[in-house]
Figure (cartoon, rainbow, N blue to C red):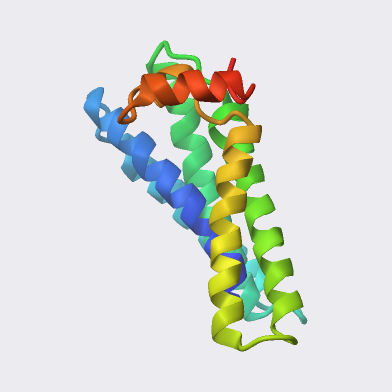
Amino acid sequence: MLAISAITIIFAILTQTINSILQGYGNAKAPVIALILGVIVKIFSNIFLLPIEGIYENGAAIGTVLCHITSFIFVYVLLLKTINFKFSILRLAIRPILATIIMIFSSYGVYKLLISVISLKIATIIAILVAIFMFGLSVLFLRIFAKEEIQMLPNGEKLYKALRKLKFCD
């Protein structure tokens, strides 16, 4: 149930960020409408999913995820209509999610391999270090950050030049 509910975090964060942008553009009603739509989806999801044998309480978690996905879709579409700014869903959503998936599977795999050989605590620490390393590597290989974003970092210009030499940037 927690694994299903964890997906909610992604959409809740994106929705909150977009809500802030929309409120900055003077649309204070958007978050309320998004929340109402999400709650309606949550109620209907609970009504239909909770009684299903084999789903039961997971239906509530699924309903929560659907609630936040609904809110996100509403505010995302409204954002696209509100501002004249085109951004890449591939670079801003798909690639980071892919990097996260790579991180999860690599660290979990290392953890599963190590727990039969070394202590749980050491296996956990190594798995966390692998997660950090693999996420960083994935961010580089998937080219998640644009030139301008890299240059905003401390010593960003030097970092950008080094990444460009290594063919991690365009």
